Length: 87
Image 1: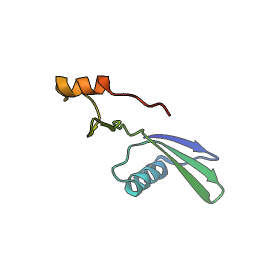
Image 2: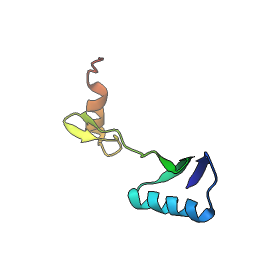
Image 3: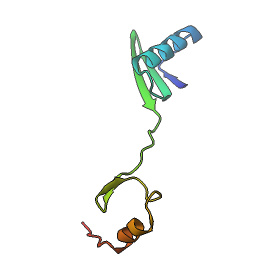
Image 4: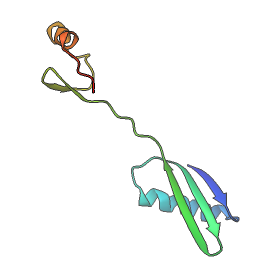
C-alpha cells in the first residue's frame, strides 16, 4: 500500500499503525494508496481502492449471460438474427 503524507512528518511506526488501521477497517478490500493529511492534532485519512473487475450480464434469447462462449450454434444464430433496438 502506497502512502502519501502531507502537512507534517510521521515516524515509520505511526505510518504502519495507520496502515494497520486501514486494513482492519476495510478487511478484504485492496487499498492501493493511503493519504494521510496532518493538520495540527487532527489527522485526515483518505483511502484509494483498487478497481473491481466485473462481467457485463445481458439478457439474450431468454437467458442471462455474460459471454456467448457457452452457446451452441442454434443459440448463437438466434443472437445474430435478433432485432436490436436503440435507445
